[in-house]
Image 1: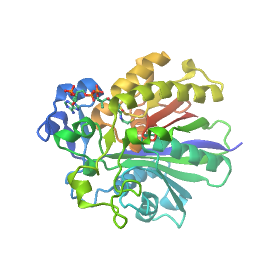
Image 2 (image 1 turned 180 degrees about the vertical axis):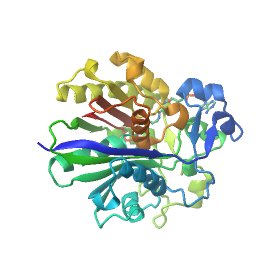
Image 3 (image 1 turned 30 degrees about the horizontal axis):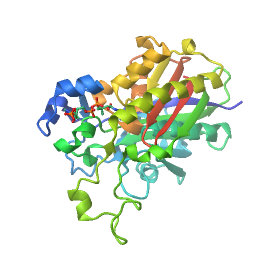
Length: 340
Ligand code: COA
């Protein structure tokens, strides 16, 4: 039977570190509030908010180069791209095609996934299905975001803008017939669109545009309607319910238990959410990997960045049973359970 193995992985973040104290100079916030509510101490933002080089596709390109290097593959070996982001370089086309061009891949298919914080889990699930159906052999699966150009750094936006950071993570998911190789054992994906407005960016969009002729009016900018809005408490409550559900669904589908897990890597939404889930599931602290303290919430990039760091630090090793789970805007949620 064809298995889906993670052959390569890499991550990349812009050099520029923005601390909580740095943010407190832009808006009425402070290190204590941010640390206590979210666990975040710093995040990376591209240096110059007018910098058109460090785009989402560019961060993905840097992460992908590292992921390719690990197994010694070249861009020509990639036969499909799945790219998850909510902050694409263009309104259209998506980032997948830009990455295909930057890497110098052949004219392979490039699919963009728009599932926000669950984007990477969705992307891995799709890639796994393509591998298992023998359609592709080496799929580049990416999560990347540049949030810093799209946040409201005034007092009005402080409940959202302190949380998010820029970054990218990439995985090479490959087909293997080796019976000793790891594999993706189960995946699940869910959505509940009735809560779309609880965490979203409305403009530019066909639903909320004022005029029949324009995607965006000057008023949308002056009224700050181009920025993300979030009902934080509401998101929190749904997240701590959906995380355990999707985790147990993934474990049950593979005939595994929480005790079998070597590592749980949650989407890095908020340290308090991760700690709540850890306790609810009865997981010891050394079996949960968190790095939100350094990167903030990088949405689709958070899980591949965390997985990449966990492997670098020797906390995830070949043969380990690893669970990735996410919850976020949509609402969407889901999991990927795999043997590394
Ligand atoms: N600095 C200082 N004070 C802030 C602030 C900031 N950055 N942001 C909001 N506040 C203030 C609010 O204005 C409010 O003041 P008030 O009581 O005088 O009205 C107070 O802090 C409490 O705000 P509230 O929004 O109720 O805080 P909270 O305890 O719910 O924490 C979140 C806010 C966003 C940290 C929390 O709801 C959360 O993490 N939710 C999940 C969000 C998430 O994970 N999103 C990612 C998508 S998966």
